[in-house]
Length: 144
Image (cartoon, rainbow, N blue to C red; front, side, top):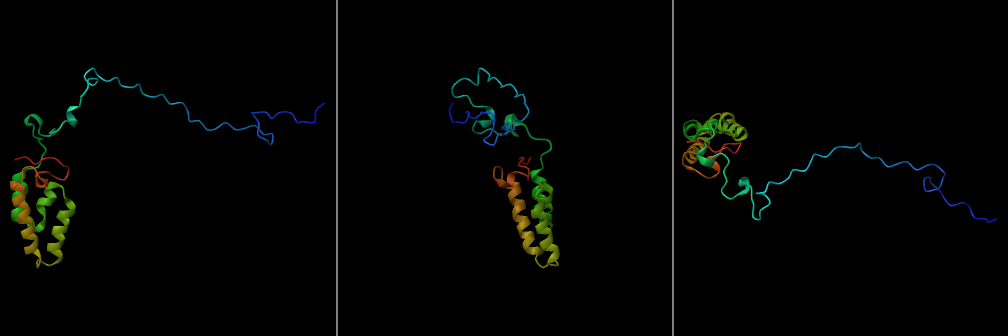
C-alpha cells in the first residue's frame, strides 16, 4: 500500500466542508431584442430627431399652445422688472426671487438698479428670436 492520502474531493474544501455555491440572482427574462426596420439598416440612416436643424416644438410650423408669450414676458420685464415678475412668469423662480429680495431688502434703495436689469431683460425678450432669451425655464420656445 502507499502512504499517500486520497486525492481531494473537488466538491469539498481542504477542511472537509462542502463548498457553497456562489450567489446567482433569480432568473429574469430579458425583453426580446427589437429588430431594426429595413430603413434603419441602410447606410447613413439617421433618425429625424438626430438630424441637424431638428426643432421638436417648431417643426412644420407647430407652436406649443402651452408656451409662454414673448410679448407678455417683455412687457412684464419692462414695467415690473424691479420685482422680477417676468422671471417668475417664465419659470426662473430663483432669479425672480433674487430680484424681488434685492428690491425689498434694500427698502427700495436698489430698486432702480433692478429696474434697469428688468428693462434690459424685457427688451431682450421682445427682440431675441433664437438665443437664450427666446426660451422659458423648461427650454420651450416662447410664442409670439
